[in-house]
Amino acid sequence: MLKDAEDLEYIEAKIDVKEDSEKRKFPFKKFFETVKNNEYEFGELPISQDRKGFELDEHGLVRFYQMDHPTGEGNVGDPLTKHFAKDLKEMVLKPTRYEKYFDVVLDSIQTTQFWTSYSNRYQQEVAIWRPETTWKVGDSDMMEGSIAAAVVPAGTVSRRSVHKLWVTLTNQSTGHVIGTGIKAMVQSPKGYRLVGADVDSQEQWLAALYGDASAEKRLPLEKRVAGKTAFSNMMLAGSKSDNTDLHSVVAKQLKISRNHAKTLNYARLYGSGESHAKKHLMRIGGMKQSDADATASDLFKLTKGESSKFMKLDQKMNVLVDKYMEDTGINPDESKILTIDGVYYMPSYTSQFSYETVRFENWLLSHYTSILPSSTNPDKLFLSLYENPEDTRRLFVGGYESSTFNFLETSAAAHDLRTPILGCQIADSLGKLPEGTPDAKYFDSKYKRSVMNWIVQSSAVDFLHLLLVSMQWLCDTYRIDARFVISIHDEVRYMCKEEDAPRLALALQLSNLLVRAFISQRVGISQLPNTVAFFSQVDCDTVLRKEVDTVSINPDGTKVEDGVAWTIDDLLKLTGGGKLN
Image 1 (tube, helix red, strand yellow):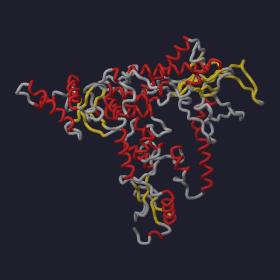
Image 2 (cartoon, helix red, strand yellow):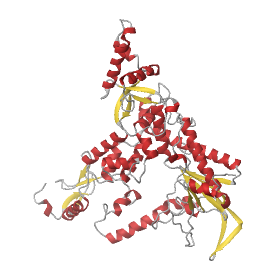
Image 3 (cartoon, one colour):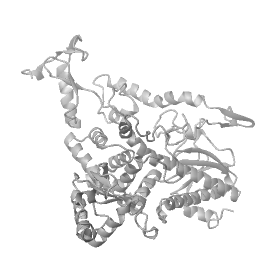
C-alpha cells in the first residue's frame, strides 16, 4: 500500500474491469471513511477467500466485489428488487448521497413493483358477468360475476397445478404495497361461504413418514409405529411452544435463530447442500466464513447425518444380519448397518464405518465355518453376500433425518420410479435413461436432487387427489351442495351455502383423517397420531385470503368482515357430535 494512502483525497481508477478502460478520479478518502464507518456499524463483511475481486487502480488500494445473486452466480441486474429488501431496510445497502431522494424512489418502487408485475395478468382474466344480479356501492353500479381461471391441473413435472395469477399470488401485504389484496377481491355470492384449509406440514409429514416406513420395513406390521425416527418424532410430538420441534432443536444445538434454522431445514429437504447453508449464514446471518463453514458442517451432521459409502446386501442374506444382531445384542437404531426399505446396507471397505462390516463378516466365519467346504475362499464368500460390492452408494447415518434421506437416495436410483402412495410414474424428462445411453451417469448425477424433490412433491399431489376424491364422495353421499373452487399447493377451497358450511368443514376434517390413514397404511404403518389426524383449523370466510382475520379492504374503502376458523372440537359441537346428514 502507498505510504499515507489514507490521506489521499483522490486516486486514478478505471471505470471498468477491461484492460484498456479509461481512468477517472475516484474519491478515495471519502470512500475509505464510508467503509470504516460501515465496519463500525455493521461489522466486517464476510468475504470468502476464493471470492473473485477486481482492483481498478494500479496500486490495489480498492477492491470491488460482485454482489451475491440470490439465486445463483450471475450478475445482479437490479439491487432494488425484493431479494435485497431486507438489506435495504437495515441499511446494509444504502446510498452515499441524495439519501432523501433515494428513500422516495425506493418507497415508490416497493409500493408499485407488485402491481407492475401482476396488472397484465389480472386484466387478462376472463370474467363471466350476471347482469341480473346488481347493486350499488356509493355512486358505483356493481355486478356479480365469476372468473373462469385457466388453471393447468398438472402443469409442472411434479404434477402441481399452475396458473400465472391465482397460484402465484403472495399473501396480502400489511404495508401499502399496491395489488397484494387481489386475492381477497374474490368474494362468495350473498348467502354463500368459502370453506377450506391448509394441509399442516404436508410435505414434512410425508418425508418423515417415508423415513419411518423405510426404517421399519424389516419389522412385522404389528411392531411398526409412527414417529420411529427422530425427524418424524419431532414433527409429530414436537412443539414450538416448548422448543421441542425440529426447528427449535436445531436452532438450540447450533446457537442460531429459529427462523434461520427453519429456512435451512426446508431448503435441505428440497435438496440444498452445505454450500447454500454457508451462503445463507454469511449473507443473512452475518457470520464470518470460518463460523459459517463450521455451523453448516455441524448442521448437516446433526440433521442429515455423516455421509459414507455403503454396499447393498443381497436380500437372501437378510436373515444372517438379523441373526448377527440378535446374537451380539446390537441395537439396530445405533448400528452403522442401515436398513432401507427392507434391505440391509453394509459400510463399504473404504468407509469410516468399515469396522462394522468386518465385525459382521468375522462373526459369520466363526459361526458357519464348520458347515462350509474346507476349500472355501473367505474373500469370495464375503463378496457373494452383496448384490454388487463395487456399486457403492452414498448414504447417511446418525442424523435426525438420515432415514428419510436414505429412502430418497435409494428411491431416486430406481429404474421405474413411482410415488409410494398412488404409484404415479415419474415423467420421461426426469426418469432413468435407457441402458447404454451416453452420459447416463452424468444425467443421473445432475438431476438427482430434482428427482428426490419430485418424490416428495408428487406425493403431495397424490395427497391432494385423494382429498378431492374423498370430498366428492362425502358431498355426494350426504348431499352437501358444495363446489370445488381452487387448490393452491397445500391449500384447498370449496364454496357452499352458508347453512351447509359446518357440514362441509366437517367433511374436510374427515377427509384429512381418511387420506392420512390411507397413506400411512399404504406405506406399512397402521397408526395415525392425533396430532396430524385433523386440520388445525378449517376456515369459513366470504373472501379468498390466507387467514380469516387478515385485514382486507374493499375498493370502496370498507373493511371486509373477518371470517371464522373452526377446530375439530368446534365442528363437533356445530354438527351435533359430528353428523354429516
